[in-house]
Image (cartoon, rainbow, N blue to C red; front, side, top):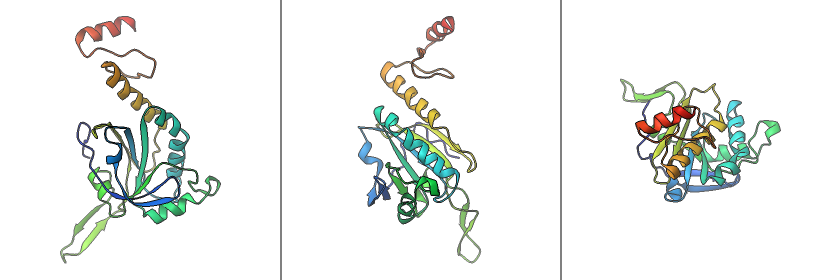
Length: 210
């Protein structure tokens, strides 16, 4: 698994569904550079069980993320038509109707591969034929990307393990706190708590108060 933290987030340009209904052929994260932080998260498949719970959970907190200058973008290896169809189904019927943030179609698997969250392996066999082992779908990867396009946090879950949206929001708070204050965030830090100076005196000061 590649560690992308501290590196430029891999660029991509792909079809996506935006605003819950409109298919665009050329979606890129470049539109957020210099303006917004981004939570980019991958999920395995449309029309499944755990995935809609995550997509709805991010939608429920979307206003909280956007109030902090963060945009949410989802990606799976399904087509844009599959995304659109799923968006037409209500939550009661297993759909994701009501999701308004972009859902990117990584149909050729290159985005998932570049972020190193693609499950399965593909290769050429002894007959020079393209072959694959396992399903070529994305693990539950999550990447927090800053305004300069640098990955500042990443998390990858196996497919049965849904993510905690509150933890993603906490990481946004930690990054913003560091950017604004210059202080670093100790274990179990949350918004409203004190940080630490990035030197030994800061450690001593923090420990004396806790």
